[in-house]
Length: 295
Image (cartoon, rainbow, N blue to C red; front, side):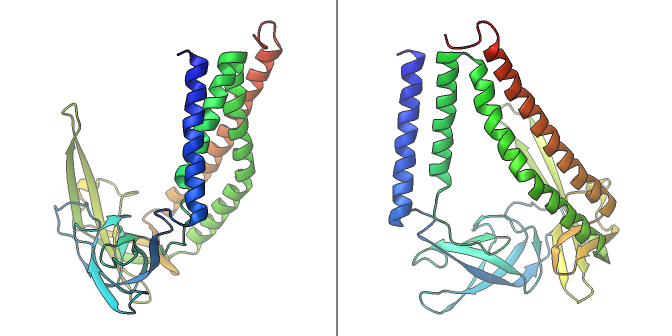
């Protein structure tokens, strides 16, 4: 089987997978559509043990009402729940809870309540794989500059379309940073996780845990993974925490560093667009050169 036949088969297989996925979504039988999504509330927060592991997230007790039975359900995330790791918690915080229909205790947590999903993620990814196969097929049959145009061109357009939104998000983030309240906090634990890869190399992850109380009296416990010098030796250290009064989960120890980071993200976005446009233009120029067109 040659390259052409292999790529056609690739596109056909993933095209069928996409059609099946979209069909299941229309029929309402995808896993996401069979998942109940609701809002839970943290009732109790357990302070992490110094020297422990970050796996499983901050230990919390969550309650929510099962829409099927109307009963109040209380669960914990101690090593038995999947989903997003709860990295910032306080009593009364609303989080997302999802579970299969009829199994309210088999739940997963997320930082925020999630909207119902149609389960289009995998079918859309299959469509992308079909697109990638078609671009490669065009490059094989018509010349490799088509790969530059096919991959860089659409991504450049997508980046340009999303750039204004990224700039607005950056501006809103900087405004929120400037309006943040400040509170005294303390590093109440430093968590340590050691992992070994397939080659036998050992890596260590250090996760400080900060505790602070907002102006409204909310006691917050959160993983602090940025802007903390010497995190391994930070246990017991007093720090200044800047937080958004509307959502204490949005906090930082260094507002200036966060503002610089926001600026770098937009700069990187612009540079990526420039590189993609240049790549697509280079492909078009090569096609116009002798020997660069159809073969």
